[in-house]
Image: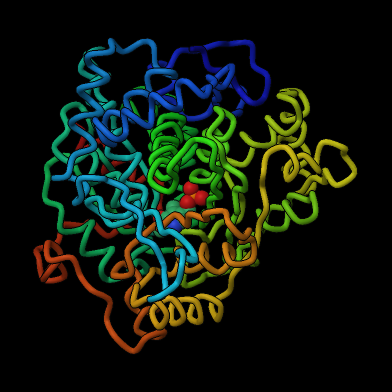
Length: 481
Ligand SMILES: *Cc1c(COP(=O)(O)O)cnc(C)c1O
């Protein structure tokens, strides 16, 4: 399998070449040259693999179609070490939780639990694999990597828990000082591993992102200090996420003749883009429901054909903060497919059109209707009031507590139900991560998994710094040996 850029660059690369890279040289995102097709025979085989070998076996089956530059036995071992009950808390890794009223014939919705990993958010699903892949590939090359990142919460902790103790990798994670939830701060800052560095920046998330960008644009520094990233545009992360669409499907259905829909709480379009890839491979998905919060860049596009990035001033700080985006960094991948893989056109839209007008408009393009008709996308948005109401309603009806992001997914899923067809809502975090809003909705603290008891009282390791790129660079220089 070779990978190409969404902006038409002539290079074709293999998996391990793009594993440690960010953007393609022309600023595009990497995608496989084609989507391997899972025909009826293979889907039947995979149902058997799921039943007999579980999540790790299924992950190996999916990944093998896209990765041909890691020997099969090694790839199998990487999947087996990553997806274990010890790491993800359950033997099924991604169990389904039916939302079903007592006496009802069928569940209203099925929650697919993606957040039982070490940091209690779905980002562990991909990041844990990435940690093992990075360690493997760096050892093979005899290289080191210093991961520099910016986080408002979930990404940073998932990256740190995936990379802690890994050979050849260091993590330098910036976060806005004092702005993450107390639980998130405790999760990150209580890590005492030598290769994990928390840098709290006096500023907001955008200041952290600007610093990461500035350091990455300093090409000499980047090369000399082997700076890399693990952000959501990384193809390996997306690929790892494809697996749980198959695992959800096999759990929700009896036969491969059935179709299901997925509702996906969305910010940067990484999670739901993996659903798109699964659907392109032939997984029988009816609808892919894109659920946004008040930052409704994606809902606006799927409703109107206009993609309009937001400025800092009209990016809302919400109670589903991991979806607070001003643009959706993986969206370019879907647009590339929608426009018949026309790299030149994608380059124009995401280059000059966005940088000069901050928007592009596909409403008049005959291909736009295919977003719904051919690719199955529908969308909706949810507000703070909707989240509170949904959290209360799901708790009252089913006795199940859901987090704020999952609540956005449930709210929008309900607008797209089709009788007789299962709807899976991806549960992207556990409620304890966003306890304040749960208390606001239900008047009580969410349940805390026992391994997190007392986490806020653990010793913390974090360096506080002003929002100054040079200081962050100096910190890296002093700590990368
Ligand atoms: C990151 C995140 C999302 C958004 O996922 P995208 O891949 O950016 O669309 C949703 N919910 C939670 C809890 C997250 O951490």
